[in-house]
Length: 180
Image (cartoon, rainbow, N blue to C red; front, top):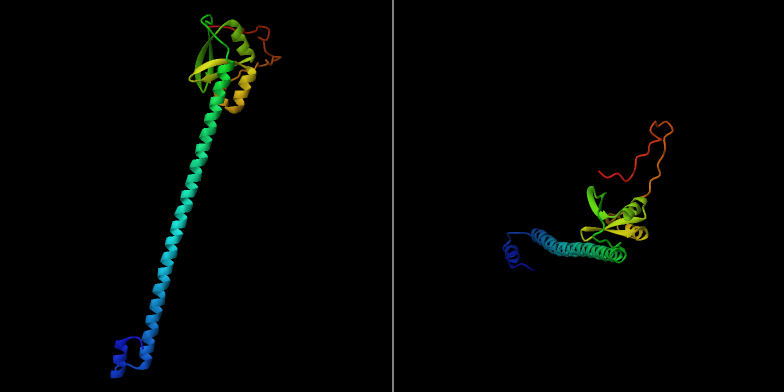
């Protein structure tokens, strides 16, 4: 016999044995439910902790990937800078012709001489951006830079002119070296 009050009621004849058993089974069921609720609460806390750890691991992994990508971009950028610095065409005050070109939807200018200008037009030289300025580089180096980062270099291809048979002005060529 577990409960002294039930024993006293049973001896006094207020309740029957069946009623006591029924009350005990109900109280046992409640105790079981409470134990299972504690277990589920503990399980829920464990699940929440595991989910938080998984989320943190995913976040850390994404951060590491981003850092690695930034390090790779920085290394590529410094490699491109080195290529430009070592292979740029040296210019001086004698270069007095302004050569205008478009880069990233902006018109920029660089000072060249007639020979260099023709080499740029023919596609033998490219223009590369380094530290906010533009430098002239050989086509081979420009192609290497373009493979690494195409936003840093400008290459001009020699365009072959298609002559229209019905063009009445086909005989009159427009010079490429007009300066306004």
